[in-house]
Image 1 (cartoon, chains in turn red, cyan):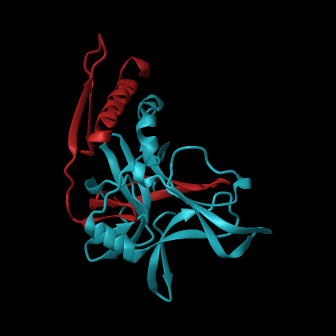
Image 2 (image 1 turned 90 degrees about the horizontal axis):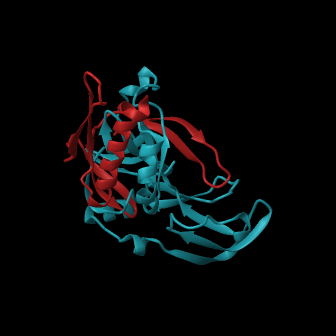
Image 3 (image 1 turned 90 degrees about the vertical axis):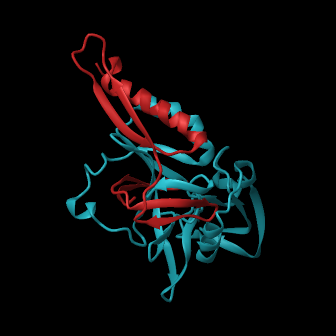
Length: 95
Length: 190
């Protein structure tokens, strides 16, 4: 994905950047100790996740659609995080 | 930024990948591009326990930096554990991968904190996806020195690792100069 760096956070230890992703332009198919590498103009196989949240007593709810990477060590945590976020955005915690 | 290409007389040497904690001098550790290409084509994979090594390497001649003399440097691949202090001498640490987060609550990030830490992934709130980006920057093509991000979650909210593109050879792209999680073969959006 392309991206945009908003600013650099200067730290005495190790500085880091803050930014946002922009467009998906291909696939990363290698994540090795020296780099990441991939191909432009290809599409990744992601797990589609659709979450519908409806508050008790509300006339209608809200549906969130995301895609999550298919990596078993992280997938459970990422989906759980997405669920918590949807409840925070639309459920009781958002009121 | 990690992955920033380094050239000598117009030839690609490698990518910035390590930094000196507390360093005032513009010195960085570089991953050679030849190793980036070789390892990527072989889908090299290492387990986390194997990756987390720390080695102290003696220097042929002492280095003088900021008025201090050093006769060795410690190189670590560790993301966990205490960070070295100023009095610990010279350390080279891998640059951490910031995870730009847009539209995710603090509670939802707390769920992931322990899961992401061993991989050196640090979630932090970024700008809205495309929201705070100048129009002229939104359609910039991938290019060496530009941002190369990997999406873990994409869609109505987003979580993506950020690094820098090192080299593009036709449709083949290399970046970062270090792994995201060291999985070997993978299938992530780029």
